[in-house]
Length: 98
Image (cartoon, rainbow, N blue to C red; front, side, top):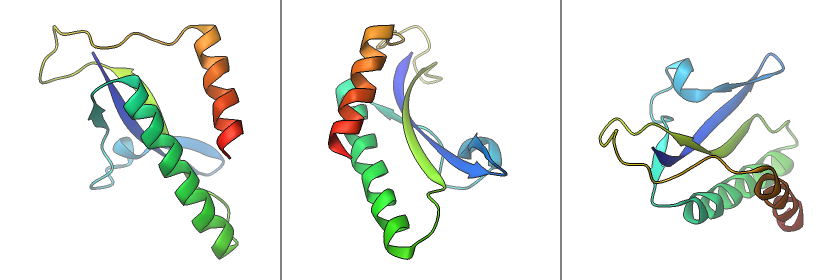
């Protein structure tokens, strides 16, 4: 298992993973660790929020870090799900940077 950046699109009021929509180039991207993944999603979410604000449109894309099975190395575990305190801390720091 590894940390992956996963892209979601807002479609008909629901967030749907881009990979399930067969959108080319939007498949999950493996990251070295949670900190790197988290920093990249903060940067990407902020960039797309600024673009949506500039164009005066609704934000319809978001990036998230998820712990998923790694098909290349299925027996190596490089991550574990975040506990409740870590998830709260993540949300607080996201609010802080927005």
